[in-house]
Image (tube, rainbow, N blue to C red; front, side, top):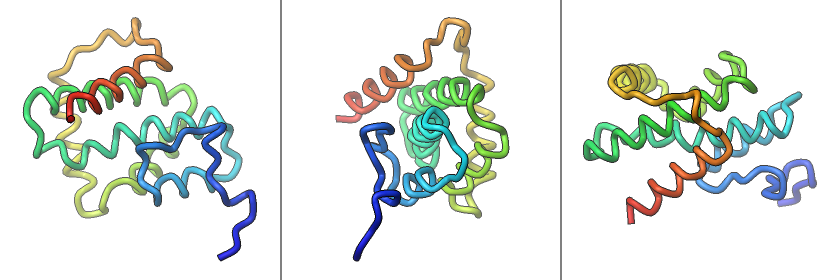
Length: 137
């Protein structure tokens, strides 16, 4: 199979580690999307992918996943339209499960308190992802 340089996912600019391959390809092939928007899509997708398994998690892991999603969504909103976020969610979630997963997220989100004024997006998401990765080991 021959692929041109334009089709290769370049980790030099955007770190797709932790993103499902189909979602990473979708992000990479979005037209008229800046590198910052791609980074935001990647970080949001890393958090959103974890929502698919949230009902199978222990309470502490569930809380961490909800917090990570709240922060990821907060950090993505300045760069991504609601429509682009919806398109990403359509890529991540199975059509039949999407609404149930997002409803469960909304219920859990209402119970979670985070002061978003103190969130520094670049470091907060990375720290939460690293914390959750190490906690799962």
